[in-house]
Amino acid sequence: MGKQGKPASTDRAEAHLIPTLQDVARVARVSVRTVSNVVNDYPHVRERTRQRVLSAIKELGYRPNLSARGLRVGRTGVIGLAVPELRQNYFAQLADAVIQAAEKHDLGVVVEQMGGKRERELDVVSGGRPFRLADGVLFSPERLGQEDRHLLDVPFPLVLLGERIFGGPTDHVTMHNVSSARAAVEHLLHLGRRRIALIGAHPDGREAVRASDLRVRGYRAALEAAGMTVDPQLLRVAAPWHRDNGADAMRELLAARIPFDSLFALNDTLALGALRVLGESGRRVPEDVAVIGFDNIDEARFSLPSLSSVDPGREEIAQTAVDLLIERIDEKDGTRQPSRLIKSEFRIVARESTTPSSLT
Image 1 (cartoon, rainbow, N blue to C red):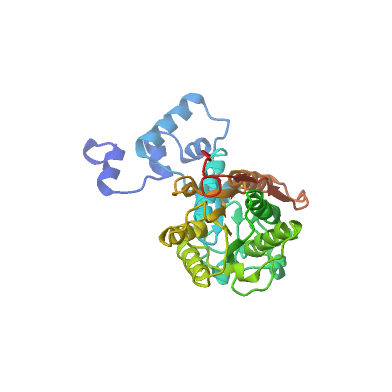
Image 2 (image 1 turned 30 degrees about the vertical axis):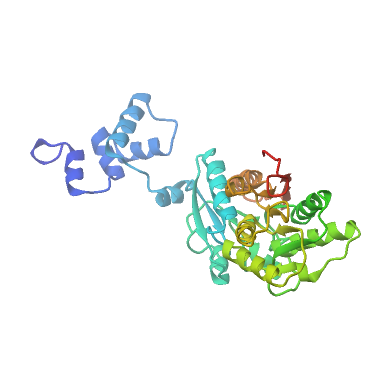
């Protein structure tokens, strides 16, 4: 009881204090150690006592201190997810899929965007903020490259996402960028399109290990397999992969008066920007220009016309990455298994922007 016969919980509410382990112990009329045993799910607690402690925890709204608990049991129940930027719908939806996958294991997720800054990505692999208290980290770098793969040899569980680094010391979950991009272009070829433009090439023009270059490689492979010559005038730079850059690239393509009958955009947001400009110019989609994107974001189903896209297996990537990270977290000292590279399955989702009769 508090002062003047009021319950301790009432005193605390009036003082606007955060309930502590000691407060729970006082309300439940047990020792602090007993409360700690219940919070950490130790088995040797009488059921009647456990229920009294749980009732006090519920009454007070007590939340365990994860960082302190982590120091005691070696876990915080939180994993980190570092992505380039959440403005790109793919990464926002990937984060959502990771959170759902983690919830199946009662794990929380701290999501941070690196904003295209190398120093922030270096902070992730050095174990700095914001994941200092995380049990492990899922990491999709943008500014680190193949020459930085040795930096991934870290003393904490880390699973790599994306296409910037291959052959590193960590588990790596990615997608079939080359073959899926090739399949997207083959979809257009099968529809009889022969002048296929591309939007989303990287501005520096040199081939590297990144999504844009791998997808351009798939584009080239499809055309060459069909006995066609790649016209460099049909390849347009657009970076970063935002709608306005897709729109600008399409305006440049139209202004150049280069004939084209179809478009492969290296992600869906670029394609959505391009669709807007095509509509403004009076081009009919798909009659005049067939359009396919990449990522199969939710918006693709609701654009007018609905957007055909490559589904790279985002949910599979999220689930696999979380499962691998949990395996690494659960590894005992000295039992670390060799790193694994896993690629998700992809599929072409044909909608109205390539096939007007599609109801997909």
